[in-house]
Length: 469
Image (cartoon, rainbow, N blue to C red; front, side, top):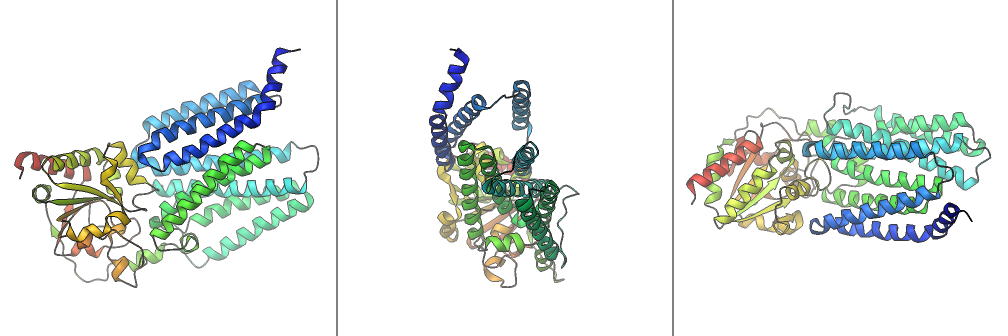
């Protein structure tokens, strides 16, 4: 008997066991990634699961073109390692969105390849799988590309608004479903192509009207969509491992999207089909009344914090933009050494993607025990001496509680305004990503420190080192 054939038969006979082991490891991956303390272990579980899945599938493939598969894997690994080493933390949100687009594109490519290379009619369930897998993949692809451009402030990814947007979205959606139904009945290739094109256009127009303040939810939802697209690929290929992995990603992304919407006190439908587009910008625009604010220096801030008992630091996108996390860690350690109780307050939608601030602080090795979520720390603000806000705007905006006319009214916020003294580091007095002004900046207790986050924090550190208590 041919030894190679025997080996292949053995792998085929035990493939379900390998896939089961991989599935369990993927579940342990999600469990590990649920906490910063176990995230590294979770990543290792995920790497092991993916290795098992790839190797098993490789040996199960019928007549694989080895040079093409291995070449693509090597090229992908090289690009991945290069991006992992070179991408800046400020570019991480758009990088995540771009990775989602590749999953969607893969789903479309596999669906098209399956349809084009078939020599027989597909069963009813197979046509449904191809239809769903292809249109979810196409929507994920174009929506993720737009999110990439939006998060990266690309000129071609401009938010669109107007009364024509929703009718166009409806027309594209109906056309996509109609062409999918046409394919289902007739297996017409022109219908399949048309469905794919309409799905790509719908994905773009679906995300284009959504304002910047809602982009963290969009990134989370696209993560979910990429998972369902992968699961669709699994059904098309008959690969149970891909179905399980895609379903885990899809469901976890959907749950995270729900959690983030709850943190904003908004429904998912409102985010996706309402949003904070031009309405937010108009509502947050200047009403013409003169506004004055108290300006301060980094030296003033350093002196106040070194003489405080309790300090809460609220990080926002400004910390990522200024790459200030390591300077913030140094400030944190210095204040701790002088007996100040220092903690970090994290809002669920701070930054440009889910967990953005947690990732930055973890990169700087800030102890997890001093990084608290909104629900854990909000009640402590009234008894806090100093709050230092670094580039955050919308997540500390009191309009969410006090102004029924504000687009973010009802959204839970970090109640920094209740602290004894508030200090805010911002590059300028411009509005935040959602286009809303913040009344907190004009309170008597608030001191605005305009400048680059990293430079300002470093100056605070020098002041504390030089002056002490």
